[in-house]
Length: 148
Ligand code: ZN
Image 1: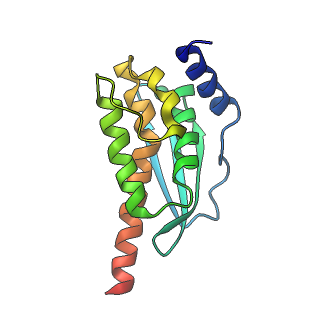
Image 2: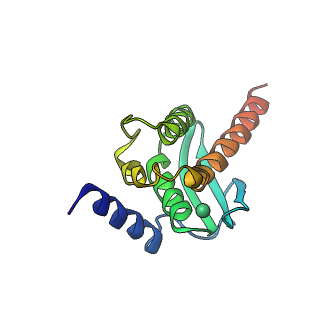
């Protein structure tokens, strides 16, 4: 199996068996993202405990790349701190925008390398990560209010 076809099968596995996908009724923070050009519409929900992301989930519909990336995002951010999540989002953006051979920021997202040759689909990849980024904004301002 070539690296490309391995990546494709990992993407399809996340698309058909998304991790942490479901209702967000119990989540403390929910942020929405949409990519009208592709028809992607997702919501990311987070429960947090101090500065750690206790649960990260998503729901919605979209293309295989968007949903696979959302699934990978939940897997790679569950249990990490808000600071680590911010760092990972920054690295994801840099990696997906890179036209060279920058290494993937995490093993869990390496299969998205297959998308890098299709710049028009970068938005599909980043949609869930941007919703996560907005969620972190809300968590941080809630914490600032608590501490102030
Ligand atoms: Zn898409």
